[in-house]
Length: 301
Image 1 (cartoon, one colour):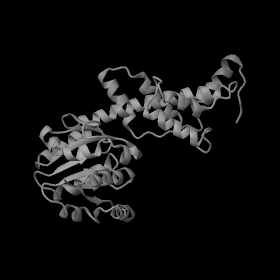
Image 2 (cartoon, helix red, strand yellow):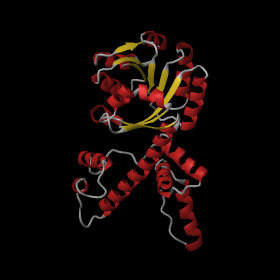
Image 3 (cartoon, helix red, strand yellow):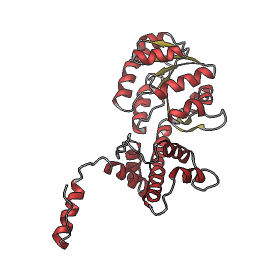
């Protein structure tokens, strides 16, 4: 099957390579010359513009978007719209908000262009291990695209599936990432407690390796944690700053809207926000309060 890949960052380029290995014909587009050149070296055709890319595709066209959520996705779609025709399919594999996905799909439907959302997990390991794909869209359209999803997934019969109508793929990925926040926070806090128990001088990498086999807390995330601890046991050179790409916030907002308690996910998001406050006014004021009511000493900077 022929497919265009827009966005040749590390994940998009890896997905393009996996598709080629599965026998698919890939046309890649990225505004960066270096990104296109790197994919060309892997044997793929590329295009220097969206117009050139569309011209290289056979109708009905299949185009996979792998670009950052928000304005970049909207801008790319706006530029693509005049170039596409009825029967073409656009797949958004990024981390778009599901409400944006529903809005875009409605606009596409007016022009009889199919819109499919694929929540995509797998990160930098996807090329070798395959990607987890949570797909939303018309059932017949998704079935027609089955060869693409079977190639990208860990195996043709696992790790991917149509979860519902358009928007449901990104919704499912949003909740997936919210769960990920909680899991990561639990591992980080547990290992921090172990690290602070200086009495035992515990080897955190050794403990992670023990837990990887037979333990009820074993997981791929623990495997990756073990890798990190082996390479850098003390986390030297890493700033205590944790970014978030939006999905955790959306998950918490959705939980509030639905009236569903999600305390672990919410607290894990708040911890990420707290990590960015290098000069915490909150903590300074707390110290001042303790001094006011109890005369407790204030630690000066």
